[in-house]
Image (cartoon, rainbow, N blue to C red; front, side, top):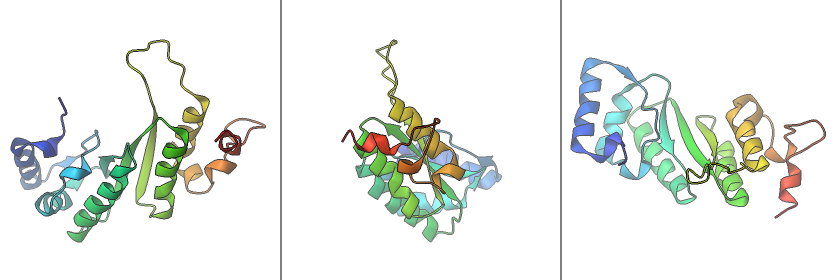
Length: 165
């Protein structure tokens, strides 16, 4: 079962309670941007966030939903950052999705997670997933260097991954 606080009336009541109490919070799992309505955006903009609002952004279709949801929340005065959980599966699609946020705003911070097959305890994580996660999760690198120019190891540039496409 998804523990998304936005998916139930009880969860929304808890957000209202958090606002009334003035408690600082961090929902450490990505909220579902598809569930953000005008009313929910107004609520989320009033929350005292510990650091940032977190959304899941695991598919190309979620980009538009995150943009829509963040614009609604911003409309009600939120000025903070958005932390975006991004699962890495297909190289080309993952790169396009993660790299997309570089051109938007420094307020959008992708966090890459290599795909882990829970049914395969012997799975080997592809090196490109490790390198992309390293690049994106180190904000000083992500903001200053294109992935193609990133050198995670001596003598290797990530532009090599694009030659395999």
